[in-house]
Picture 1 (cartoon, helix red, strand yellow):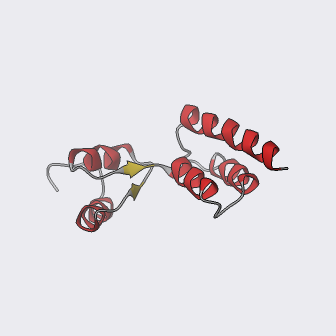
Picture 2 (picture 1 turned 30 degrees about the vertical axis):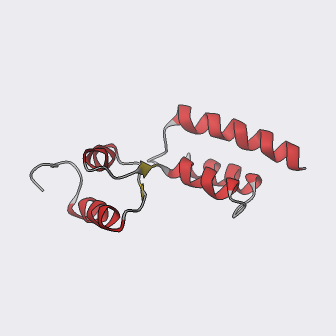
Length: 98
């Protein structure tokens, strides 16, 4: 815990679980992302998750766009540049599928 003072106890417990299960960690918290990188845990954000769900056909690109629009209205929104590129991609894919 002393090694990572910024992430909370709960954040670090999720990191330990992701590492022990060899799974991806989804977070927007920079301190937790840094701790994950230091521990070899693959870490992604919310926009990556939405993109994954859309690309796998689990949600439509329209739903991905709506999800992004909901997220950016929240106080803790994802990185704008990364997500804007994905948003443009989703809109393009949405038009192709109409």
